[in-house]
Image (cartoon, rainbow, N blue to C red; front, side, top):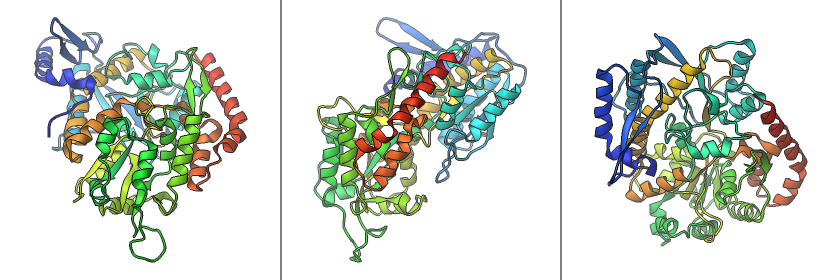
Length: 492
């Protein structure tokens, strides 16, 4: 399969040998910056570097990350745990990244894992809140669940990353989309980028069965995406007629065939797939409620009305264990499987072929696709407000992010996600689209109006009266947004 990389990495990967040479020279001299690479044009060469002091060295400091996150189906993501090389590509890339930064800066990287449910007051929130209130500097930084990050930011417990010394959020190893979507009143309290692969895993995606495409004589989904014709109407059209009571018992369960296997949270992804957000940061830096519009109404009604329980297998209504739906999809009992990009890891040994798609557009006139970060599974990099040495923290994080840009991300993308799990060149194209069109919706992270849960409840019950639901919770949503805007205006 021909190699493919996200656009941001193309130049760096082509010139990887130049990077390796420059790093080797840096190691033999007395202190070049942590990560150095070259980006060639026809007329000049521009270096991409982590701009940290040449003499930065921290005499054996243990740099401690708190690692948290919501757990479901053994979903535990630790982007920094790699005790030794073991032949697994992503682990080994993390190990080499950690070792390079540890040796360069004279530190030891340590992680403390504390997973569990987090609806804004989970283990990450409680740990950082307690430390800040007590002046405790046990944690230098953390990878914290999205809901908890939002609550911590609003409460004034996190460091504004725009002001953390030596962190340059304009560099390509930081995700500029997340920085734009999550900055309120000029303040950015949590982010992601090449330093983490958990954000990629938590991005919404759709798998499809190539066997059922052939069996039912359906259009090529890849061509639909490329031509801009992959829409919710097309998804419904393709799913029509696929569902069947295979064992003839008149019940639709795990023994039958469905148009789709559905994860409840995908209804939020479908809302965002229209290009809309529950809440959006305005040009003046304030957050505004933006959930209600004709596009959202249309997408919600179409997705909810069609994918009922005779057409789709809503597996969480039976069990949160993903074993049955994974086996069903592997057995070609569903045309589509709507969930997260991490889902591909379950099908490495699947005998029949599958492909990967972004969430559909509302219609062909819509400009581009939009791929949501699943708020339940999301984790973000953040820094507790109380710091023993803020400059050291900024230097270490910038160095790790830059090193990840050249080691971890290529390993994840080329060797793991594409090389190890996907089956065809077209899937690589689709992953490019998915990862380059991500959406971070503060409305979900702040659970504004509890619209995320209310939308899922309606979807579970196949209710389509979106307007009534929206109006019921609008006042509480507006009050929450006012509270958030006031908090961000006051926090220093």
